[in-house]
Length: 254
Ligand SMILES: [Fe+2]
Image (tube, rainbow, N blue to C red; front, top):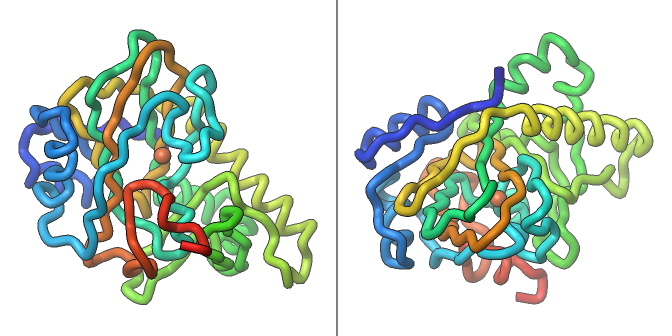
């Protein structure tokens, strides 16, 4: 199974080990304010290339443009795609307040999915690794590259966002559109059956944003998380310009 439950720990060093091994961890015993959020990434990962200010995630979930309302499920995705190929490789979600109903989280292990795809759908596997796709969010950093981005270090960044379309110069745009849909549908289906877990106040979901896809179920009532995007030395590098833990500085005009 590629759905993953994060292992709880109160030890930031163990959380780092779990992130490296499993792609995720659930760090417990933290505070719930902005300062607590700001401290988490460094406590877990140590030295970082960039640690922007935390972003408060409230009604409407994590969609910076309110694409997904609280009453809808937010399918699994990676964060920071507005920054193009240089998106953050680490995501931390600190729960300040959990909703009265729902709001459970889920994770899908993208590496595990690809390992299985290599055997059961090699056409899709090759497409994901080799064929450039237009991943540009409107008005944000332009990016046209394979969905599975291989960095010079050998590390891969696996992506799923609402913005995936055949490249403008695609040789066979109809085929590319079909394969993009197959990838998106597969991850959507895996996310819908992935095991659910609840973040409680003071708990932090620590995610390898290059490997794992995350989402949440619908919820009712106030739900407040702090989101931290971090760029580690193992990331693909920093995007140009100012950074924040949302896409406010990712606009082309910024
Ligand atoms: Fe997200």
